[in-house]
Length: 126
Image 1 (cartoon, rainbow, N blue to C red):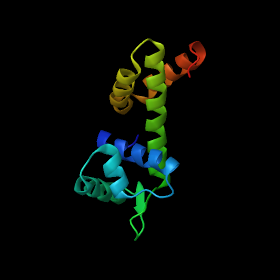
Image 2: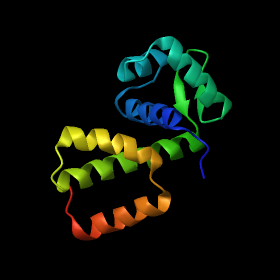
Image 3: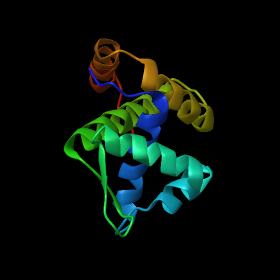
């Protein structure tokens, strides 16, 4: 079981997503993406660094460690699948994404796996 909180998971997921579209990720990029103050992001990055979920170069480039990437990918997979599932059930896509963002942090691994199997068996998702 991972010892992370919702905030840490959101930061890790954001770093993962930004790293897919940018050559490097910096605190300012994360602050901009999430609409947070750079000072808040700096505190969060310090905490993630202490948990060894990210590394930060002397230039301020942020990289996920293996454990950080594992958590980020788990949260992102949950987000994508839950959003698609809710949308397929007829929920407005904006509401589905917002609800998935809340659900992805609290759902148990067992419940998520059950939903995932059900979705893969019964729905053709976009």
